[in-house]
Length: 145
Length: 386
Image (cartoon, rainbow over all chains, first blue to last red; front, side, top):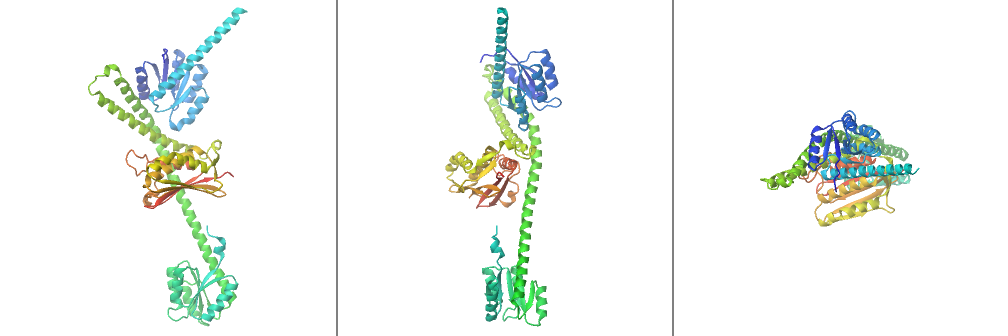
């Protein structure tokens, strides 16, 4: 698949995990921005364009679900993939109901992760495409009046 | 369960050296519904009791050969649950008192009034029944108590194991990503002719496999947790499940494995098939686990029987094998997490723990009976819809 330039944010309080997974993603030419808490994630989102967020459900302070709610409120077009432990699958289900794109069990197989990443990116891309078309149609109609 | 009518029947062994006396008493007690066996002396009485035990004995004290008191002693020694009523000579209360000291229920002096003897027999019979009931109740209580002890232990172990699993999952993810990163780098063209590349690849592959193994264990542990989060099963997942169909599905999944070892799998099911009110998929997982274990424990030519039973309140699925059995000392531990007798890498010791968790969550009970070299039976008891 042709890779459009995109920005991925990885949110997890486990620093070593964020670092290692970022290195792997960079190795396949992804741009990865790390964040170590829900609050940091939201701060970065205000300043920078992000396409897909990989978000851990279980974090101290603001947890994955709260963070997801805020993301969807402030940046509804950003796609979110939840990372969940087996004991917190309820969190994954709740996340999907709140608009997360999908979820993965942690530790996730790298291939499964990149596949979901590509799907999420594609969905965002399609969504933006539809918005552009709708805007074009709207402009066209206005021009006719 | 003991038949009520059988338990109500009073059966007596009448021991007296006078044949005429025995005949008269037997006839008259027979009219009152008492079943009588007769013996002419102490030795004969003991022989008869060995052959067909009776709990109530009417015993003449004055007999040639082994006398009543001695016979009483022997009976009480060998059959401590029996009750003995002594018949003493007229005005010979000493024998009676001595008899009661030796454990007789009571004594009557001859000539005997039949109505009186009958009343004494009923009293002794009731005493035996009462103590039987008490023993049964005590055994039942003991069993429940043991089950509760096991359940509590498993729950505590579960909490502990889950905590460990959670904590291990995060470092495991780091190990996986680190090793994965190295694999990615080594796969790049510029590393094509790196010295000893094959050794690196090999070692990284081993790390990858070990991580996956550890991950399977943590997954299984965390699956059981959900039992402790929600005590009762989610009613939405419960449906009426045809156990016959479910067991057949299980058999079709393990059949090939059994055929390879030349083991027969037999399904015994009443007609109509029992219906359980349960969640079919986890239950199928438990059945597959039990049958797979049974196949592993059974030698070629053996047999595994899946038997279904139903009553008004519950249904049972029994998985019975003719395998190597489980030693008594292991029986109380087999449901614990990480308990395994299989070799390293062959079993995680999680199967029965997970099964226990699932059955408990479904509101059921899983029990085991086993005899070394004879075989093992696991029984799952589930509630029916009410």
